[in-house]
Structures are given as structure tokens and as C-alpha cells.
Image (cartoon, rainbow over all chains, first blue to last red):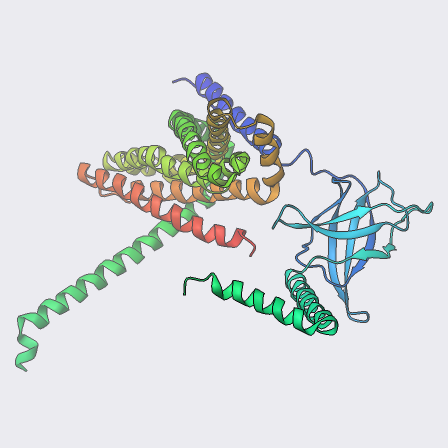
Length: 184
Length: 270
């Protein structure tokens, strides 16, 4: 095995390896699509950011326009201060809404920007004033239970005010269907 | 006094002494291996000044392993595609097959299986070659001629292994993904666009691919060094060389799997 043949085959080997690495980076990974060019920073205050993490996507109309750069706690107003970097190509008016959505049912959380109608645009260092917090599951459940309880309570109150007998009969009927159809 | 002379007592003492001696031998060997590693690094200059030495070793460790790596990768990718689809379609997420195949290969299977195959094919070849050189006294002859055997024989093979392993692991991952693609899209009928786009959205170059490359470099260092040391330290008999070859495979495999756990625990940010 002379030197030239070895050199040739090693060259082919290394070229294949480099091609495989490039293929992995381009086709398999997200090298081509994750390049956001120059950006400008904008901050937004939320009362609850839920599971938002640094480097989470910032989307407007479903298209990636930026990334979350930093999340910190403002101890004066007791809210979360999120700094987002938006691509310089995209301009947003000063009354943009910043909402925290969840991708998919239980996926990662991202910030959605909805443009308002003002003429002035956000510049580097500006603050988004209209924000909506993340949906916290426990609060939703307690809201639901509270509204359910207040619905049934108001029903009972109106029934007793109108007609005591009919309400009793109704409740008895309700009770009998509940217990009467049961096999025990 | 009679208790000390009983056979049970002396048998136990013998057992404990044997265990102690074996442990000390292993630790002594570990020290000798570390010493060889440091000497290899120190005398590495010649491997790069006379690069044809290293090139020759890259041919024999890397290029000759291409066949087993590529064929294994293709089959591993195809099996991942089949098994993954089998489970994912129960939950209606059969579009995620691309992500499953790519992440499994790039993060774990690529570096680890390549390292195991490399240890089996190239590691045993290195151990056998160096063990035979030692048994036929070629290394001693080199020392007599004032040629440093570590610089001339050991260091080029070390750097060849370190260079070849990441290349082989990248090839394994890429061919494996292609194998998964072959099974998922033409055979099963998963959507072509969904396969690649979901994969591109979920595989991060910095977190997954670069970590896989780092792992493969570490495995390359470990496997090659273990193979070199077992060959260098083998008893200069036929039996000694054959035992050294099996030890290479066993110790390399254990080291690769242990290092994989350690590296993964560093890389996964919980």
C-alpha cells in the first residue's frame, strides 16, 4: 500500500466526514433557519410569566421575529421584566400587545406580539405597555369551580324567592331520579 | 490460639489477600496507563511533523472501519424508524418520527455505537499489532537504534484514533438518519416535508450536534488509549496478546458507556 493510495483514501474519508457533519448541521439541525440578524431590545412587564424561559421564541402572526433575551424580577412593582430581542427588519407600533401563549397543548411557552394601530414604532430600549400573562392552570380551575358554585347558589336563591313548593318538588324530583334509578 | 490455625480462618485470609493484591495490581496498571497517556501527549510532535505516519494510521483505523460503520448505521436507522413509527402511531404523532430518529442518533447512538464498533474493529487491530511488535521485540530494537518507540509507533496511532472517531460518528448519525428516512417516507408513507421540518425545528446544532461531536472525541481518546496501552503492556506471548485483545474490547466498552453517562449528565441542563 503505497503512500499516494493511502493519501487518496484518507482524503476521501475526511471529505465524507466533513460532508456528513455539514449535512447534519444543515438538514438535520436548525443552522440555516436560526440566524436572526441585527436585533433591537424591547422590554415588557408581566405579572406571571408561567414557564417562559430565556431564548424562547417571539412570534408575530405565527412567524418567528425574535427571541427572549433576559428574564428578571422587578422588586419595586413585583412583576417579571422580560427583555426581548426583535429582528431589525420588523417594526412594531408602540401599542403592540405582548401575550404569552403555549405552543400546542402542553408545549413550550412563547411570546406572541400583536400589532396595534399607533403610528409611532418601538425603538431600542422601549417598553411594551400592553401585556397579558401566561395561563396558570390552577387559577383557571379555581375560577371554574368558583363560577360553578356561584351559578348553583344563584339558581337556588331565585327558586326559593319565586315558588317554594315547585322548587321543593323540583328538587325532590331531581333527588328521586338521582336515587331512584340507581340499582341500590 | 486454635482459632488462628483453623482452615476457615486461613482460607478467608487468603481470599482477602487475593482481592487486595488484585485491586492493587489494577490500580498499578491504571497508573501505568496514565503514564503512557502523558508520554504519548508529550512525544506527539513527530506525529504532526511527519504527518504521513498519522495518515497511514488514519487509513488503517478510520477508512477500514467505514464498511462496518456505514452498514450498521443504515440498519440502526431503519430499525429506529420502524420501532419509532410502531409506537408513535398509537398516539397519533407519527409525524415526529424524524425527530425521534435524529435525536436518538445524534445525541446518543451515533457516538456510543460508533465507539463500541470502533473499539471492536480498530481497537483490537491496534492492540494486536502493538502486542505483536512487543512480542517480536521490534519495540526494544527501536529503542536500541535511539528511535523513540512511543513517538514513532504509539503517538501516531493515538492521534489517528482521535481524528477518525468524530468523523465516523458523524457518518454514523447521517447514514442512520437517511436509513430512518428510507423506512419512514417511501416504505411507511410518512409525509416527506413533515419528516424533515419537524426534525429541523427540534434538533439544535449547539445543544445536540456539537455535544455529539464532543462525546465522540472523548470516546476516541478513551478507546484508542485503552487499545494502545493493552497492546503496549501485553505479556510478550501469543496467549498474552490474545488476552490483551479481549481486554481491550471489554474495558473500552465499559469505559465508553460509563463516560457516556458522565458526559450526558453534564450536558443535560436540568
